[in-house]
Every structure is written in C-alpha cells, then in structure tokens.
Image 1 (cartoon, rainbow, N blue to C red):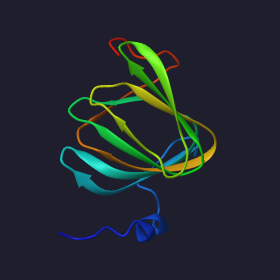
Image 2 (image 1 turned 180 degrees about the vertical axis):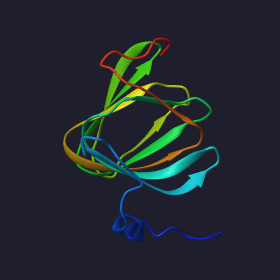
Image 3 (image 1 turned 120 degrees about the vertical axis):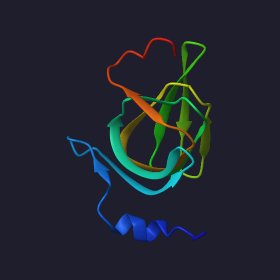
Image 4 (image 1 turned 180 degrees about the horizontal axis):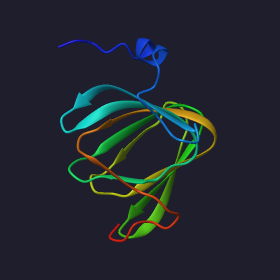
Length: 123
C-alpha cells in the first residue's frame, strides 16, 4: 500500500489530452476495474457511464453542470469546489463547464462513452 501524491502527479504530463486540447486527464492509479483520475477541462464532454459500479466526482475548481439521465429524463446537478457527486452505476451523464474546471474522481468499473448532443438510448 502507498499514498498517492496528487500534487506530484499534476507536475507530470497528462495521460490523455483531447484533440482540441480542452480536456486533460491524469490517471494516477487503477481502482478495481476502474480508476482514480484527475481531469482539467472546458466545454461539454461526451456522454459517459460506468456499467458495473458507481462513480464519485469531487469538484476541485471552477463550476460544472452534470446532466444525469434518471429514468430517461435529464436532471442537472451544479457542482462548485468542495462538492462531491455520486453517479449510480449504469447512469449516463455528461459534464459541461463554461470555463476551465478541475475534478478528481473514482470509477469502480469500466467506462463507456457516446458522442453526440442527444443522450444515448436506454439511459
């Protein structure tokens, strides 16, 4: 067992950067079938879900609107620094920020993404 130094993690280049440069993610450690991650982003991300378990998102900086599909209907949660949101396993969601924001998160299962403005069917 070892403690993760997230400050040191952020001094290294990101593990993934989007083509447009508006999303950067560091993956300091796997977690079960998921991962621990730190994201720095601006704009609207893809629809995302974790089919085998919940996800936790902790807002570090900026403001984010998280649209979750609950029983097929969109519900929006606004997050500010210090807040934590639990996304139930299998729930489609997407993150939108008007300006740069950062989050730290834990996913416990594999991740699926879907592009497009409309939410995926079966949400």
